[in-house]
Length: 368
Image 1: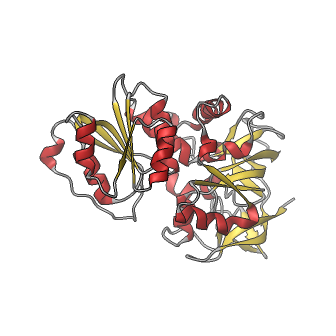
Image 2 (image 1 turned 90 degrees about the horizontal axis):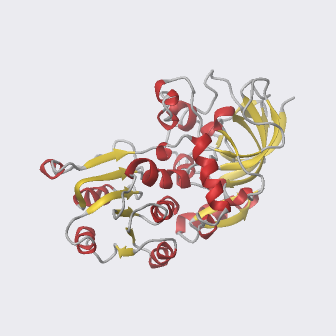
Image 3 (image 1 turned 30 degrees about the vertical axis):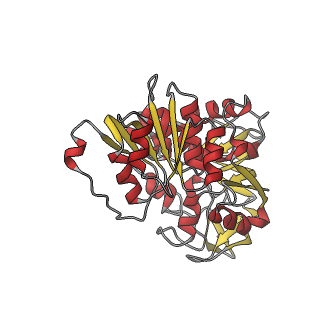
């Protein structure tokens, strides 16, 4: 039987989130119904809500859900009713990258997650007053009290860990951690620089602190965030509001430059400065996403020293192994996500949006 639930609907680009009664479709063979306990709010949600991407609106967003499985489709094998789950991105499971352990680069990633608004077969997962809504966002659309979730977005997790403490693992945290662990892979004595001390950047700082890197530099314009970065493992901080990035990195590294840089700001000029601040054979990971079509000019001769610029989606993580490992680190206190999280009642979603936009809260988590 279809399930009636309450969701935060975006009516049109730039409109606020409005709580509304919606109807979930019956779960398909590879889907489950999840009762949401918590859901992280991410800048990607705000970008889509603003109309910046061609996701069909009105629709239901949300892609950092965490909850309890209430029902499963006939072919679901990875989870059972009663399991605690973190919800992450969707993937086809059949293409070369999925088979190779890189589902974030699934051949059908964009329509399955970010712009399609429907299942792969074109059917709708959410409706209101008999009319389909944009849904299936990252295979979940978790800004709702219940969500219809594709099996490949479900990750079973330790039930002893509070779900509100791990909801952000589904996107932002695994992106920052994966940038360091899966791409930069710091060596003993290495230098990692993180540009931007938001949720993704601070996750990268925490990941670097758990690596063999011995110099970890956080760069931002907000003094409070730089202080928090120090508490989370940064050995140095740079206030970009009155410091030239290249000069600061050169001073910290004795003129060598950075071995690895994580760029989270999405500002083209910052990305260029980061590339220029790399050491020979250094790597910059592009995480921040500016508007589609944005270009960055690079000094070609400056790249000939073996520098690399690598784009990244969702940490290049294989979620079924990566997220449970992060949950264990949270449980043991080695990945202190609680320092980033502020909780809000679901009905206060617009206040959560305002607080994240203003910088008051690093990672808002909605509670259901």
